[in-house]
Structures are given as structure tokens and as C-alpha cells.
Image (cartoon, protein in one colour):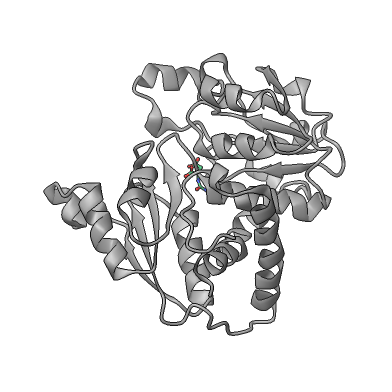
Length: 305
Ligand code: NCD
């Protein structure tokens, strides 16, 4: 199903393909747990092209490829590459697609991954494009939820923070709209979700917008917290006016359901206090760890024979 496909938006992954990824993720986690040596990607090369900072996305893609027995070539510092000499993204992608079997790209501009997919002769995976999409983060977010609740349908999901610039939120809301869920979007008024996402999903899913976290804390099953995306603000006064608006601490978590789950794509700045880490409802480190088996599954399904 996913063979040779580029994944630029979460809309490039059907619901059926998503559950296929989750099934293979379970197998991949099993082989990690058993320290089984996998060789299915032996002889295959992945390029990771990161024009923006990354820790988890790049490292977990690379770990995933290594665990599958494949190799990785990486550009993590665009200043040290021909991008600094003025090479266009299209030309760089033409080259990298001749050097490797699959490309993972992160770029500060919305639409860069779509452009890369157009010029690449091999599948391109979007590791985050500006304020656009981050589809593989959504796959691991939904895998983490599905793994814990055994279903996505029926859940009440609150998404908190920077809903305007947060690409993880944009992909997540689009994916959740395929399920029977209630979504509460909690943000400062200036960081509400963009209208183009709202109009895409609002016919399919119950969506409400709030500014007060207390409106949703006691009845949500999942609280998905996000960082205010400082690097996307053109006006630092605007950033300073919203930073610190929400900061989850133990007293907030005490108001939540006993089996609720707190997620965050990470990195966090101050939106979740470190004391929350000790509460069993905090699942963001497990969520980040799931990035490796989910990406192993995705690579295998795209490049598999
Ligand atoms: C996110 C991103 O890059 O969009 N990080 C990630 O990939 N886990 C979220 C963020 O930077 O706040």
C-alpha cells in the first residue's frame, strides 16, 4: 500500500495504511525488545536533510534505519553544505535522490517537502515543513494513544498551546478528524488553529475552541501539550505576550482523570513542569521512544519488496 510513496502530509496516509503501520510497529518493537538483528534494509541508504534544528526526528529516523540494517547519510548543518552557496532545494534534492533510496527532509518553509517530493526520484518523508505538516510525528502520537486506549474512537482530546504555528497540531487534528473523537483546542486567542485546517475538518469532528484550560482538564482523556513556536513569530512582542500562558503543574494533573494521558511532541520549554514527569499519566518520553519503531515500520512499508 505504502510502497514507494512520499509522505508529505498526513493526508498521504490512509486510515487503513495507518493501522498497517501500527501493526508493523508492534512487530518492530518486539524485535527491539528481543535485540533481534534485522537486515531488511541492508544495502539501502537513507538521506536525512535537516535545514532546521532537530533532535528526536532526525535521531529516531537514523536509529530506525540502522536497526533495519540500512545506512544513513546526513546533512544536519546546511551552513556546511552547498545550500550556503545558494544551491536551490530542487537541485539539492535531485542530487540526494541519486545518492539514496529514501529522503527525510525538515525545512523552515511550508511546502518545502512537497517541492522536494516533486523533484525527487525516490520517496520523500516530511520531517516538518515550517508551520505546515509533521506527518510522522502524528503517526507516533496516534500510535501512543492507540496503544494505551486500544481505540481512538470515543476519546476526548484536548490540544494545548501554539495551535497556529505548531505543525504537529496541524497534522494531528487532520488525522483525528477521521475518528469519532471530541477535540478541544485550547490556546491564547492569537494562537488559534488556522482557518484552512478548521474548515477542512469541522464537518467531520466535534471541535471547540477555548482559552481556559480548566474548561477541559477534568474530562479529557488525552492532553496534548505543545511549545509556543518562538522561531515562527515575526514580532517578538507578540511572542512575549503569550509565553508562559500555560504551564502544567502537579495541581493541574490532579484535576485530570485517573487514566488520562499527557503527551507532548517535545522539546518542552516551560509548558510542563518537570515535577509532572513523575506522574504515571505523563507519557511524553514513551511517546518519543515510540518514534523509533513507528519510523522503522514506515521505512519498511515504503521501501519493502
Ligand atoms: C516538533 C517539531 O519540530 O515540530 N518537534 C518534534 O519533531 N518532536 C515540535 C516542536 O518543535 O515544538
